[in-house]
Image (cartoon, rainbow, N blue to C red; front, side, top):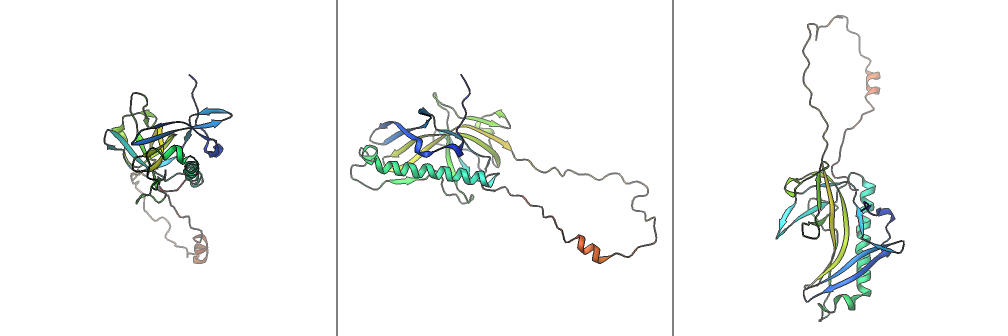
Length: 244
């Protein structure tokens, strides 16, 4: 089997989103999503930029979940990714209005208002919000977890790690309490320790003449020249929350 590649976000056209089949019962409606690429229906799979994963996974009922913060290494890539997620929401809302009779009638017999839950959720610690992801392990599908390029168990994933993900826009879920959301499932989550500047210095051994003044004649300091040289100041800064 050949290795499949995710779609590039910059090349994705949300007008090519296709809804293939619908499963319904009294509690939930599931509308499955595919992507039409050159007249072929494919899994709607895409890759994220490098994200600063601020939070550890947590257990919710019988599965693990992670709030993936939208803090990025690269601002431009981050903006493109956020705009992309928002464009999916807009497309789904538009299509829901067109297909309302087919999508909502069974669970919304009274014609009540449907609440749309955005892909990006608000978060107190992350200005750009988070996306909530279920880390899956079923008989049919399992999310691959990697840490520093090695496959790991979920318990080994901690906080404040760089993360790249391959995600699938899998389905639209409409629950019995009339909440509609796009279900995105992680195929691969690849984490990496954050690199820190190495300032592990130690003193060198002092030689006999260290600190001895050999020239007793002290020259006067040209303060004007010194001030001019100090006008150019390099400020050292870093950001762990650059939005990309």
